[in-house]
Length: 106
Image (cartoon, rainbow, N blue to C red; front, side, top):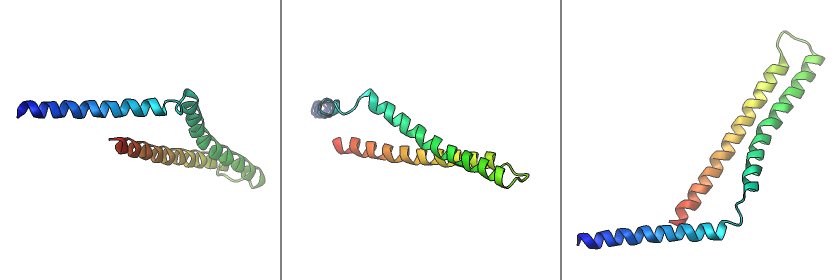
């Protein structure tokens, strides 16, 4: 009885490893270093674009309507926070999809 459980456990482990290897073999072509770099770039752009928009609008406001508040600094920080939030949400969504795909393979 104990030996049968051990064999069943071993077979289950082997089956899981085989599924993982087959999945990796079939999907290896679609995953390259370039995709990793493009993902990294996408995250960078999602942070830098709102930051630059905030900077540009802040400079424009400071030149048009001078005030004791530095709109350049304020809007740059707001753009940075918005960009970081956007990147975080995107990464969280992608992670959920990866986890779902991983669970579907089991």
